[in-house]
Length: 578
Ligand SMILES: *[C@@H]1O[C@H](CO)[C@@H](O)[C@H](O)[C@H]1NC(C)=O
Ligand SMILES: *[C@@H]1O[C@H](CO)[C@@H](O)[C@H](O)[C@H]1NC(C)=O
Ligand SMILES: *[C@@H]1O[C@H](CO)[C@@H](O)[C@H](O)[C@H]1NC(C)=O
Image (cartoon, rainbow, N blue to C red; front, side, top):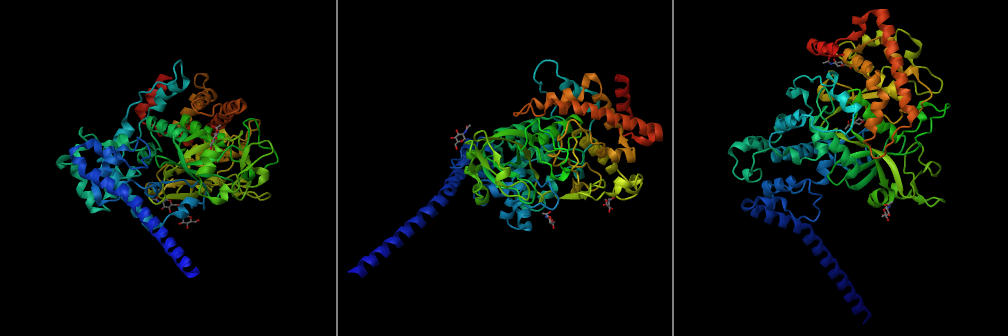
């Protein structure tokens, strides 16, 4: 009797198991079958393509992926998976820490690469002409009105110094070259001419317009990167991307491994990703005088302000950053799959939600990050293209600090250090030394002493700009100007004419740097971003830089200090205008 009961029980369990399996399979297959049906029905009704009823359709934005999905039909798997899209982005801002907790989930390199390329091909197929898209992104004329009234910022961006065109771009000058990348897949290459001969495609793009508009903003940003700039002066793409950083739903959160302080990788509904640095300090707090630069906090507002400052200086070398108020429960704890992160959440005696995560510095209960009561401020920096698609080269900053309590670096003891650097590749030719000077000025204005390495895109070789990544240690002190940051400039006495002219412009009352930065920062959700004394400190530091340059010119002569990188025509217009 007992045996029979036991046996029946076992049969029951097996049945339940089978039912569960069947359900699982059905649930898995259903969306695919549905899509196949859509694909089959699509030619008759183009709208059906975007009407994909997949349960997890992210938003209206990627509608065209729906269309593309329908067009490629059952030949390829459907929605761009989170996985394949994630591979398009990367953000590693510390040397040696290019692995993120998320990239650890990924399959190894070569597979990533194939997948990533396939992803790009899909986009090319859906949109057609990527070259045209680049055009679309770069040539769109500025037509935005900034927030009414007399805007110093829009006046600045109208100034001839801010309208100097970048050189004509060849295929070697853009980070992504769809034609070359497409050769990886002969099928995709065949499809290149589809607009002329396409039969079924026409139904999806009835106007014959490439669908660049339908790309998510983060992808438009990636496609627009070239040898001379991270993004163009016409800020439409960047402004939309900044909006996305603030408004897109956060669908998953992971800890970034490798850094000294806690950083989170946030993934959005449109598959965009950003690096989140939580607020650690109030805006008025200064770095204590006995703190070493290498143990200073990384400030979220410094990351935001750096993006705006870099743009005002017309470098455009900082990836877009926006401030955001994050609901720690809903947007971090509830969407993270990282148990280690999840476990560090607690409620403080003051009834605020806190967490501390895992990292090598400041990740403990004593340094917990607490919300008010469950909201925390932070900066979100857009990811750069994934390393598998666009490798970057990491360079040691010749004027790196010793990162040691007692040791001094060579540049601190040798006044002729620059002569050595000037003879060492890549500083012996090209523009790299001038780029270091730009970066030096940028860092001195912010008071950032933490520039041990820098990065460039490998594709562009030595003739390209320096990406100004990782600026969280700027804006630590407003009552002190750290002149040692300017040493590269005082030792080398070199500067681009364009940079010099812009600095002179920003020293005028009409275009006062602090006013411009203040106005620019008003656009951020977390405004005010900087405590007023920080803004005033920048005007003071700008005068110091100009004084150093004047001394250089007196000592070495104008033409030995100022490198004329401006066309004669442009230089003439500018000097005649002012
Ligand atoms: C990441 O950095 C390590 C060195 O820390 C290097 O060996 C590796 O090739 C890098 N990976 C990528 C994808 O760049
Ligand atoms: C944060 O999200 C939780 C839901 O997880 C909600 O109960 C709470 O009201 C939210 N806080 C704010 C300030 O919106
Ligand atoms: C780029 O710079 C490196 C020095 O790090 C040098 O070895 C290389 O030859 C340079 N490449 C070109 C094309 O000048």
